[in-house]
Amino acid sequence: MKKQDFITSFTVDQSPEDVFKAINNVHGWWSGEVSGNTDRLGAEFTYRYKSMHKSSQKVTEFVPGKKVVWHVTDAELTFVKDKKEWLGTDIVFEIARVGAKTELCFTHVGLIPAFECYGGCSGAWGALIGTNLRNLIATGKKQPDVFA
Image 1 (cartoon, helix red, strand yellow):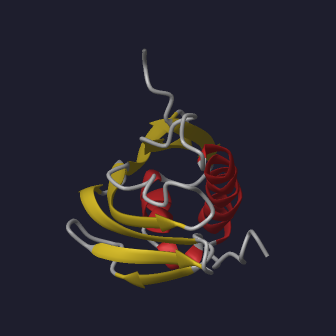
Image 2 (cartoon, rainbow, N blue to C red):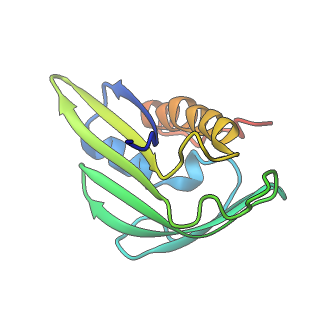
């Protein structure tokens, strides 16, 4: 049986390079606190949202204008029984030119419906990717906390 990783995508008028730049400006779209580097291969950073979520990521793929992958090296989700559900998962951004537009396909590999956090986490990713990241790409301006 195939896993059902969380996937969402959208298209924008901006170039693949603009989309790539926005993805790597994590401070500009991921609501919460981000510490560390996010914009090069091998970079490591920590994300924290209040007392609910803390995770550490390592950039394992970094192909300008095409793809970024973050491997989750540590996780603590305080709102679910298994606080380490994200540990070992991969957060993948794939960028492709589709005609005159650019498509961003986001996949959280390993975030599956069997996880207790799937509903809340997929909803949060939907807002962060579909609203905040999309708006950052379009405007170039840091986005507000989507959960406030």
